[in-house]
Length: 388
Image 1: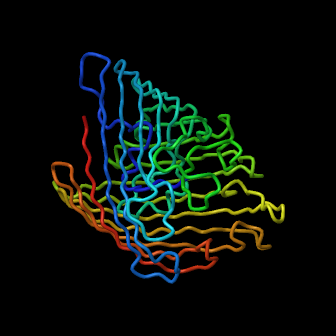
Image 2: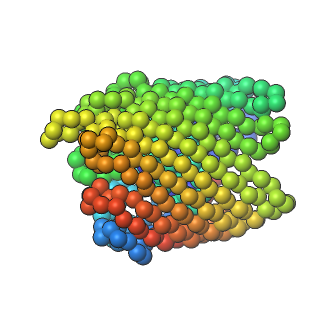
Image 3: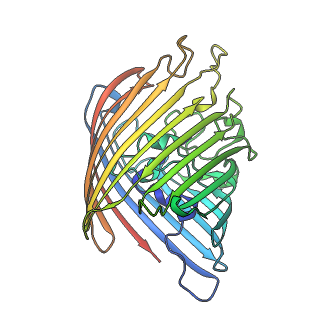
């Protein structure tokens, strides 16, 4: 799985919200869209890990377009521009690439939603909604992007339980011509690549099976009369192992998000999520020993955001347990606990321009250096979004 960048705006990556606004036109076809631009600069001010002491300035642009043939039927697309390599030294606007993130047909009528094509399966809340510049860093591990297949959901009025929306999707990670990247095209085998110039089946990796054998099941609850605004999410997904793996990766997630209106202008939104992943990466085979490198993981995310008009402030605490066999045959050779604490504050102007500052302190294992260390990072972010 490839972690999403700038996850504070990752809600726009869900198939059901690719286009923020339904068309108001009475004639069809109708064209609507949105563009989000994020300019961010991060600098590690302190670190006990030498390879983390760097700065990284980058641009992310996400364009979404929806062509509505009828009020129910539409063609949705998302084009993303972002760094496709991880920073290994200080850089500014380097290693940026563009690619088609989503391209799918969607049909929606009443409580039923059906979609098919290239999409991002919705799994978990924290990866999309954990607030701040760095709130979703850990939860992004279990987001799935650029899948090809089909899915749908059906909303049910459950009375005192609110609206229940079970959903399902079957898919495989895109390894077709739609996976081609442009501008920066990282080659397969480059260890700093977060996205190759194109995906091929023989690269391996979970979900990369060339047939829709992976799946995700979800259940969302909202509009609960006794707790208006509360959102609940349960998910279970299985990513079939690729050619380099021996086990399917399985994940379960449970999350909740609850916007509380304290006054006409002030809203407080806590979020909490737990996720469990078995056979991380598909228990890939160690080429030197021929053994499967197994690892399980547990994630906990707690966050809270306060908004007052255009102002916002947030804090997030996250944990990631990497659990490996005692005989040292896991991905890292031992178990460890990663943790991070973050805080952010910002202001969004009525014209759509937003500015924010963020801070995080992480305690993580560095697989390149083979050691555990602490890193303190500060960041500034500017965002702008427009709909048409």
